[in-house]
Image (tube, rainbow, N blue to C red; front, side, top):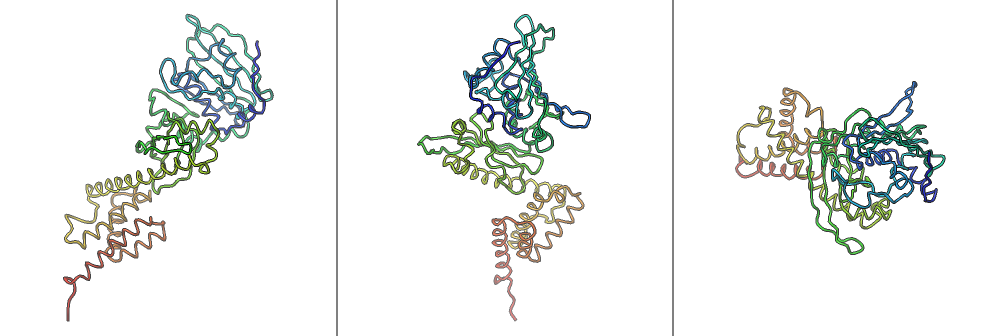
Length: 425
C-alpha cells in the first residue's frame, strides 16, 4: 500500500469538503461522464432501520489507471482535463478541469473509497483508493490486482454518511439533478444516468424547447460578450429558474430560482464563456450586486418575457382549435357583427387563460368543459368588466390582460350605444 499527500493548504480542502450535497453529487456524476461513461448509477443503501448507510456512484467509463493515480490525487488544480476541451475517444465536452470533485465527496460522508477497474492491453486490473475526512488530503492507494473482468469503470463508495446526504433523495433532489444534466443528456442521448433507481430522461419530461442568441452586451471591463439562452419547459408544474452556465451548458449557479411566469414550469440556461470567467474569479455568488451579472440576467428576463408571451399565444390558439374540433367552443361560424367579434375576443382571453391556470379545468371531461365554457360565455355577454375584476380578485388576472379586456369591453359599450342601436321616442 502507498500513501498520497495533497500539496495544498488544509483549510482549502475543508472548504471543498463543505459543498452543498446536490452539487457534490453532481461533481461525482460529472467525473464519471468525463471518464466517457455511457451509464452512471447512483444508489443509496439503507440499513435495517431504513437509515442511509452508504452511497455508491458507479460508472462504465475507462476507469483510473494505477500509474495516473499519484498525479491525479496529489495535485489539486492539476487535472489532466485542463489540457483539452473534449474527452479522448467520444469527443464529449469536458466538465471538470481543476480536480476538485473527489474532495467534495467528503461533504456527503466521512469515508470515501474509489474502486477503479482499467485495462492495460491485453490485461485488466483493479485497485482501491481510500480517504477519510479526519485526514483530508491523505489517501491510501492499495496495490493493483489482475482482473479477469473486462468491464472497466469506477465505483465511488461513500460511508459514514452525514445527515445532509439525506437531501439527495426525493422529488426535489430528482428535479435538481435533472436541471443540472438536462442539456448534457439532450446533447448526448446515448448517455444514461440512473438516479436512486429512476433514469433521468429529460426528453420525456420536456414539454417544449427553444434556444435564443441574445444581442451582444458590453461588460464592465469593455469586453463584448455573446450569450445563448436555452429554455426548457417541463411537463411537471412548479419548476422555474434561470441557471448560469459556461459556454458548453455546464451549470455554475442557479441565479434566479424564483423567477415566475404564470402557467409555465421551466428552466432557462444562460450560456456564456464570460460566466465561466466570473465563476473562476469567485464573483457569481455576488449575484446582481455585480454589474456584469445584473446585465446578463436583465437580458435573460427580457428574452423570457418575450418567449412566454409568444408561448402563451401559441397555447391559447392550440386550445381554441381543439375546442372547435371537438364541438365545445360556444360560438359557431363567423361573428355576425363587430359586437360579437369583440365578445369572442374577450371570451378567448378568459377561457384560454383559465385553461392554462387551472388543471381541474384543463383535465375536465368534454361534457364538463362544454358546460363551463358556455357559462363563461354567458357571463361575458352579461358584464365583461365585472368578470375581469372578479378574476383579478380571485386569481390575480395579469394586468396587461385586464387592460386588454377593458379596452375590448369599451368597444362593446361603444357599439351598443352607436347611432344604429339608439331608438327615439
